[in-house]
Length: 336
Length: 128
Image (cartoon, rainbow over all chains, first blue to last red; front, side, top):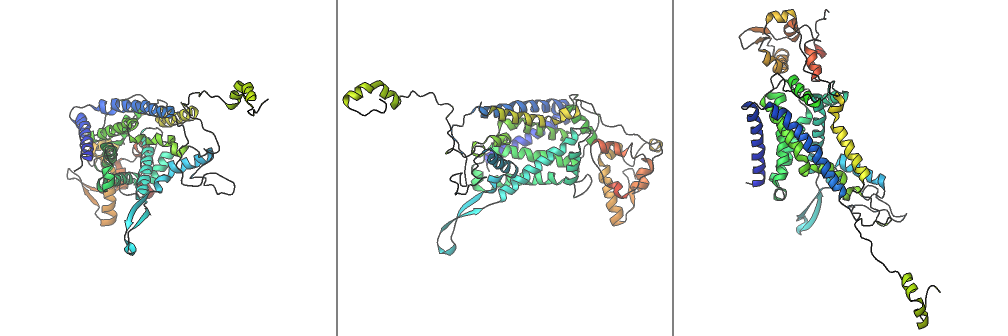
C-alpha cells in the first residue's frame, strides 16, 4: 500500500463527509453554499495573479527553447518552423499546438530492451496512451465547465445550449447522459490507475499528484450521481447559483440534497487549490521558457538582465594611456 | 517584471472570461419560475405521486413509461398509493397539465433542458 494515495483518498473522503455532515446534520447550507464558494473564488483570483506575476518577475537570462528540429540557419538549410521557431509567429504556432493539442506529450516515447534476433537491442517506441487520456480528460473538463454556465447565466447563452445538445446527442435516458461527464470520470480514473499500477510512475507520484485527481473524480462522481441517480431539484440549484452570480446569495426553498453541497465543496476546494499546486500548469504553460522563446540565440544578442555594468579598459584606451611611451620603445601603435 | 505588457494583458483577458457570469447577468435577479396549475390540476390536489418526487423524477418516470408502453406493451402504471393510471404523456400528464407553456416550459427553459418528448407527442392547444 502506498501512503501517498491512501492519504489523498482519506483526505478527499473526509472532506466529502465533512460537507455532507455539515449540511445534513448541522444545517450549514450558507457556509458550504455561499461563504466557501466566494472565499474559494477570491483565493483563486488572488493566488493565480500572484503566481503569474511571480513568474513574470523571474528573469530568463538565456534562450532555453527545447528544440527537436533544425533551427533557422543558412538559406539552404531547411528550417523547422514549429520545432525550432525563429520569430513570434513561429512561437505562437508552437504554443497553440502545445496548448490546444498537447504536442510535446504526443511525442511521448518509451525506452526498452528487446531480445529479438538473439541479442539485446535498445528500442524507442512511440506511446500514445497518456496523450490520449490527457487530451480527452482536458477537453471533457472544458466542455463540462462550459455546460455548467447554464447554472450561472440567465438567459442561457446559445453556445451553452448548443454544446449541451452536442454533448447529449446519444440521448441515453432522461435526463440525458452527457458524453463529457462519462469521459471526464473515465479518463480521470485511468490517469489515477496509471499512477497506481505503473511502477515507475508510482515511484515518482506524491500525495499532491493523487489529491487533485481524486478530487476531480469526486466532483465528476457527485455530479453524475445528482443528474442520474440521487436527483436534486435543478431549478432550486440554479436559484442558488444565480444568487451567487448576481451577488444576491440566498439558500432557496426546494429539495437540494447534501450531495449537492458536497459537489459544491469539492469544486470550491479544487478552485482554491489551483494556485498552490501543479494545477497551476493552466497558467504556467503560457510562461514555459522552453516553449515560448524563439530559438534565435545566434541571430540576436541576449543580455542577461541581472548583469551589472562591467568596468572595461579597451585596447584603444590603453593605447591612449601609453602612446608616447610605446612610441619611445618602438612599439607599433594603431593611432598616431 | 519582464514582458509585463503581454503577461498582464493575458491575465486580464483570463479574469474577464472567468467573470462571465458576473458581467453577463449584470446582477439581475432571476429566481426559480413559479409554475401555474390549471384548474383541473388544482382540483386533483395531488399528481400521480408526491410533488417532491414528481419535481425530481418525472423525466425518469416518463422514460420508464416510454419503454414500458412502446417496447413491452404495459400501459398501466400503479402509483405508490395503489391508484392505476394509463401510462401516457398526452392522455394522463397533459390532461391536467394542459398548459405546457406555463408549466413544462417554464422550468425547462430556466435550467436549459430541451426534452425531446414533443418531437413526437402532440400537446393540447392552449386557450388563452
